[in-house]
Length: 112
Length: 113
Image (cartoon, rainbow over all chains, first blue to last red; front, side, top):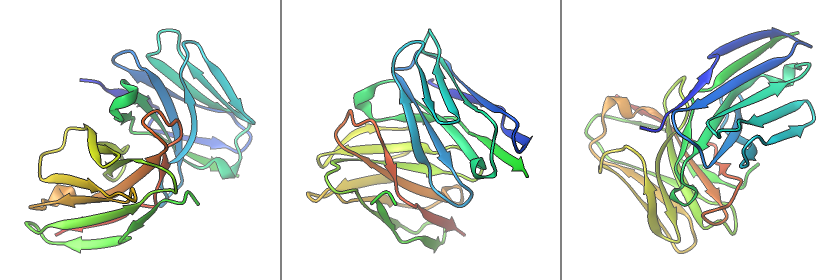
């Protein structure tokens, strides 16, 4: 079946260090979305990538979609304590079917 | 705040009981999806409703059912509760089937004893 794998499961960094989480799908995606969930909170939409090879930036966050539309990454430059949380990718295989297949997330902790 | 609300916030039930969870979508959003999030895992898609019709379903048994009302609020019903139904239940609304941004509610935390 359609699966989305995310690595690493946990990442501990010193404030100011960079952070990257990777997302891989077993089959080609229609698009991919990224979410952030703070402890005790709910997922908050960050961005959607649609095109092969697409790169989008939001301040210190850089999102990439692979050429084959089967993998994606989120890179945070110079982490801050406010970046703490779990980052999820969610793959969409059929836009109209509504089903988003989430990875199990990467939990980021930042040591001040 | 996303404008999506859910009730109740917490709920305790016993095995075999039935539960109804409610979601009020963001204004103007006619598409709602429901997810189950077990501890330490990503949300799992249960089903989606678009203009009061089910439009897409994940790998959940028929005892998970839903409704969407003309005002686009929705319900998730779970019959014959099992212990492993204990989870955070999230609804998410968006504008149209191809709406890019999905807005999640705060969730209902269900504990089945």
